[in-house]
Length: 251
Ligand code: NAD
Image 1 (cartoon, rainbow, N blue to C red):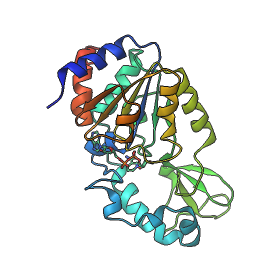
Image 2: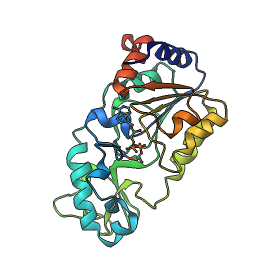
Image 3: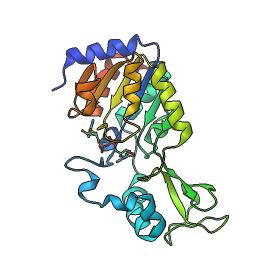
């Protein structure tokens, strides 16, 4: 049962924000049919994370690709943004938020129309050659034979998402911290706060004066430490309620 008083308080904060920023994790896309990594139905209960380690990928690209293709490429292309992604896009159109920072690689914020979107962990939509760094749109990749290879140098293509033990893209990281520093309202949706350095971005927002609204089905590491308003519920339910109070459907 959603707490309507807290939802009204959060809507007022967002309505009067000067510089709102959203920060999302796997939880926002669960209701689009993409499992989160952790938790009871999480991916790590079914798949060995080793396939997502960069050293393993370099040594055994075929094995990694077999798993990654099945999890992300066979299923993700059909996934559609849910009401939470759409509400964030409308919040952007209405000027309630200035940007979306996401840890997700599913491209659903862009598909919903949000901009700018800072993809901290990259995107499945693009492939990059591990030899010559050429980049290719997913639609140009040939998955008939794994691993897919580069059209320029025949090197192995890797999904342009951040694997374990890889650094996060410089541009997205820099912009995300800048956004956090500018924010006066920072909305965290569906993330556990376990992945470094992404988990330090909301902390930066808090330190520089932002009010923190958090939406999650259960408390995270942020809840007790930095969150001002915790909206306990599924992202789609909470975002629909916020959307109604902000008249986003009328736009
Ligand atoms: P996580 O899997 O560690 O945690 C998911 C969080 O979402 C949890 O706090 C959970 O309580 C919450 N949650 C689950 N269902 C929800 C719902 N319906 N509404 C609101 N909250 C819900 O994910 P994370 O913290 O984002 O970090 C893990 C890493 O996983 C990230 O780096 C991300 O790149 C990657 N990841 C991405 C996707 C994707 O692109 N959709 C999917 C799985 C993992």
